[in-house]
Picture 1 (cartoon, rainbow, N blue to C red):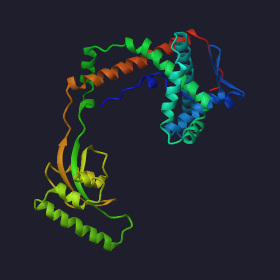
Picture 2: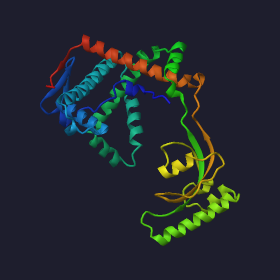
Picture 3: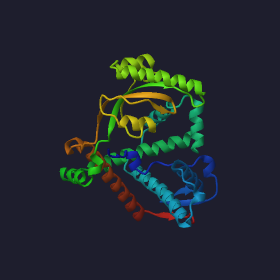
Picture 4: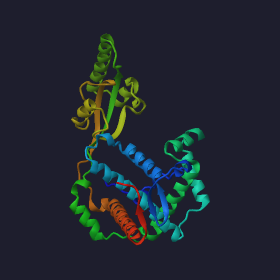
Length: 322
């Protein structure tokens, strides 16, 4: 319904630190109160950013647009450094044990140590630089929580105003709960196989139309993964099903059974169990998510303002020609 933001994203997502090999390369992108941001670090971060966003630099027609994008990345790096310096100054440096725990938590997501180390390498990290990155991230997050987020409040009037001004955000999506029977037909199936599968699904359809228990039919005949559950798919919104199936299912009324539907998976018959959505969520129900959203937005704005002040009162030198 509403997009909320973690403090990590609010705190200018921590971007890759330079590896020791990169630090040895000549060239600086900026200095922040005497701390150097290497050109290699900037370039690594820029490349990582455009890769994650799927941006094709070669297709950018405007040189000004490319310059603006590079400046945005450099500004993020500068903001990250300013927040880290402020967190250290205010005594919010993550303890080694906390960093160890965070590294172990990330490591356990990978099936092996080798895969974990390869992932670090692909992100231009060494183990040491990755620990440093997490240390900064954890420190800045706690700093933001303790010095900014805990002082943010959202009034009842602000919640009401947001609810009234954004009615489209509070309409439940149209969802259906359907069962289906699937007789699989592979994409390269010959005509005889297709004909036999259609005969089989039409026979099942005839039984369903005559009042046979649809869930029992699905358990007995369906070749899809939902067969053990009587073919039940659970509530799903538009966009989650293949198009021919979705069009047929959403056209049904509760209790109705479709004609035979052909998809890339084979032949289906569908029974609509229930539908919901299309109604408006009340302000009372929406209030918790509205408060979270507005609080996150205010926190983000407050952090951005703090970065602006730190930048104005500090010594920031842009050394990279943009």
